Length: 74
Image 1 (cartoon, one colour):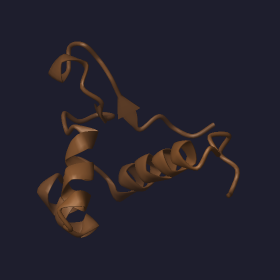
Image 2 (cartoon, helix red, strand yellow):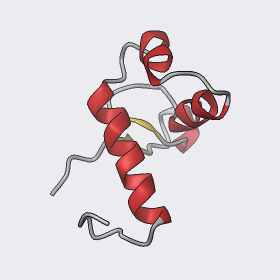
Image 3 (spheres, one colour):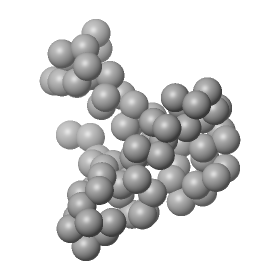
Image 4 (cartoon, one colour):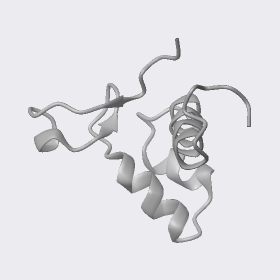
């Protein structure tokens, strides 16, 4: 089972999904990518988030969007 990399806790930003162990909302990553920013720029701006966490979030999103949420390769 993969580590959970997203946390939702009512005591952290009112339950906004954040990268586990940080107060960085996952939506910030999406906004950075939508704006055309590089992943490295995001990681430099938010050093409490690891590359592994970002990759895992993106893999989870891909699995959900492609209907492959069982974790198997598409």
